Image 1 (cartoon, rainbow, N blue to C red):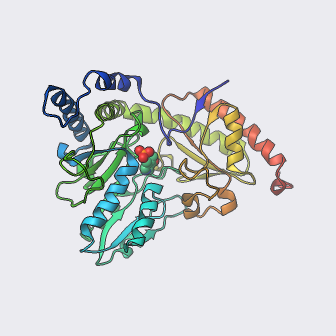
Image 2: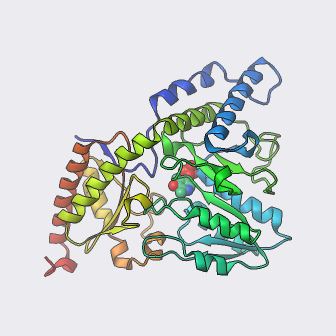
Image 3: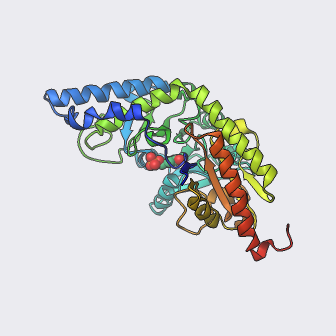
Length: 390
Ligand SMILES: *Cc1c(COP(=O)(O)O)cnc(C)c1O
């Protein structure tokens, strides 16, 4: 039985070298980083080193890096924390229609608390409409949120321009860089963004740990109250093995970024090229220009059939993919991202996301294309919608 993992946007395998770095912090250096004895100091030293390393790698100052439990918490914190701290200044927030559920569902809750949101549209390839975004800015706008790169269709947003628009109007700007981190060499200072979220498990680090970058002076109320951890801005005992693993994973990712990206992109391009040529009525969602989409991402809609059926058939063949986003699968709602780029609802239901990783091989890509061809053919032969189309 083959095991082919093509769901790297959902999570990645922990790098063995990262695991080795983490292990001593479970059983040997297990102190609480806040304790005032040798055990605590040893843990604190590891946390400080991890923070320094991460800060250097993203162009931040160490005290601008706040550890969290991952991307979802960082997104929640940036949004809720800014709303809470600036509610007397204004209660209007702008975000794109294709943000991650961590943003959109937090926005829904904040709407009930009296905050107002403008959801800015995107074009057919998922790029944010910059004109619409600028026009949406009001006197009471306190925050603009635009993800760095989309987790479903891979669109890399024109984030420099979004930041510039926000700065021109004196509005804070947040970006969810969870997907971008393993694919793009990010420098927060150059970008001049106010807040950015990261998650270690998306680039071969451990699950349950991430960070929110908060530029010095940006007022963000804390989300999690408790002790004095993270310079009193985020309570809770620090996940020492987690942050050590996070720093090591980021270091390793950055060391071979260029080479890995090139390799993963070549697998992805081969896949897109073959699927487009060999499977009729397959529509690529997201940017056609491979340099403007995440190098690991290929998202297709297969007309006249259900994405879930494709997913289950591929799963039986040992191939792991995702229908829409892992977060919305389970619900039968079509993906909000596909609807935002204008994919008709029936077509959106027939969509599958393939996300490649550096562990994948050309043979796996070719095997997947063959299985996919068989599956699509078989499902269509049973589909009344497909009759007469071939
Ligand atoms: C995975 C993901 C998240 C959530 O991160 P977790 O660490 O899994 O909570 C947020 N935003 C984007 C774009 C993601 O891909």
